[in-house]
Length: 514
Image 1 (cartoon, helix red, strand yellow):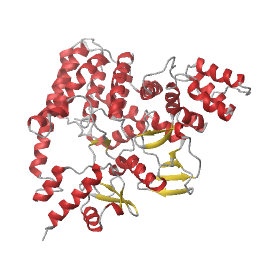
Image 2 (image 1 turned 90 degrees about the horizontal axis):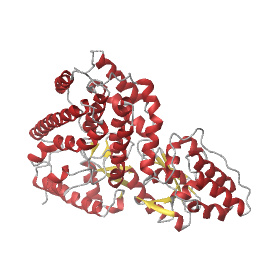
Image 3 (image 1 turned 60 degrees about the vertical axis):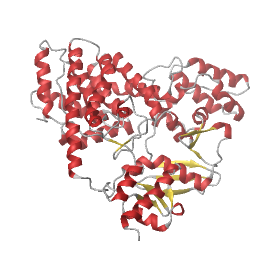
Image 4 (image 1 turned 180 degrees about the vertical axis):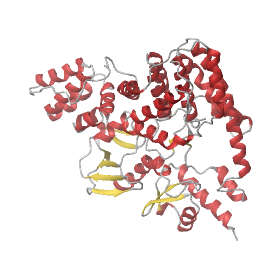
């Protein structure tokens, strides 16, 4: 007679097989009732709606949102495919946002399908899907982005609502910057005689500095007999001009975000004191601050069932609350790694205090900071040496956050762009705030992004002569909320207010964290 532990191991094997097939949305029909009930009871499955489940971790508290936000997009792929086959497509607005790397979980995802019934399907944590009965684009105008059927980028620009230019100017400008020639949009514009849209697109391209494309659209429409009048759909001039196609719309997007966020930062941050004359005294203050611990990682590695976990359950060695000694070991390794990384950052500060480019120093050294953070865990056998080799090779999620960091492939475009921005930025305050924010926004590593991001912030502080500043644990909720607000709403002000206050207090000799 199998024991309860053996039965759970069998249920986990079935779940692992489903996940190996790429399933995130688990239907009742996918699992025999006994397995399904056992997995739900032990916290490995969570019901999303009647008959639909997602894999979860048993150590997550009740009401935890991370599993759902991490599963959202993949769940939608499986759920929509089950309902509509392949006859569905995200709205042009959601399509455009995904094309430029905005993967934030929306409150309501709008989906088109000729099979739709104009219904809203509620999901956990106040999210939902609205399916609308509308025709979808021809096959040549549909692309797949991570399994989701979306309008192609040129077609999304043509069919999106004019309000998107006002509500999401950064995303629409980034999308426009990815168009290299007017021919990419003219076929659809001419085919439907879309004169109003053509005029709007021409105005939008001129707004971002692409006057040749704007002229080609207007002149071609007029040559075809259409009365086309150019109109700028944006409410203000573009913060930067795009004279030629960027290599990636994701890069265009963070450049636009950077430029848009500069002024609010400069309005709030104290003026830079300048590089200190007594560098040794500065470095001593840095060393004295070591006693303040760094925040633990904000990233989550995912929810896949592993073979190791199945074997632990089968052998009776699985403890959902974690073994206390194991926890103590991990804490000790993290503390040692933080010490080693801190010393590496201190060496980076020496270069910055000598007047070297902070952007260059951070670009050269940030990989060393990260490796030192986790070197003790490799020595102890908790991580493999390959885990420290460069940027992440998988998707990562942030606990409690609707912000979904860029894909692993996109990271390789964004990180060089980030360090270019740091190199080119003249104002230390902007390097401090936006360097830290953009780093954790990109989330280049599977773990340690928050700690590395704060190291980056302090190296940029040194470049302006500001003192090493600690983010106190008492401000953790405010800190994470401010980063979330900047990531989802592109509102940097709460984060700028928080960091500038802490820097001012440190400069006045009364830091909150002691």
